[in-house]
Length: 98
Image (cartoon, rainbow, N blue to C red):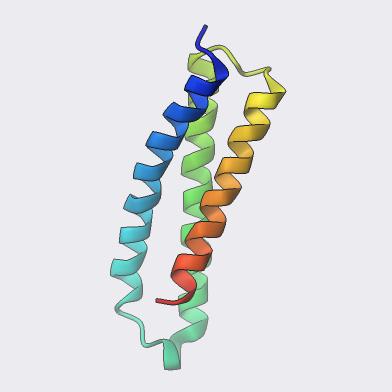
């Protein structure tokens, strides 16, 4: 079994890659919108991408916990959920000012 810190570290590395891939996709879509006239559409797009990011990071966390047989380790699962929320917050902050 892998140490929980190694699971967290592995998650961080993969999550960062996932975050930037989704963020770059969002930017490519958002640049096509005129926020002065399409703010509502921008917010809807942002919400969809937040949901997509959350889904992908949750799947990644679940896969790592399962792969390393830590599915029932509440502390590691809780820490991964905290990291997911940090990435969600970072995404919202970065996309707010585009």
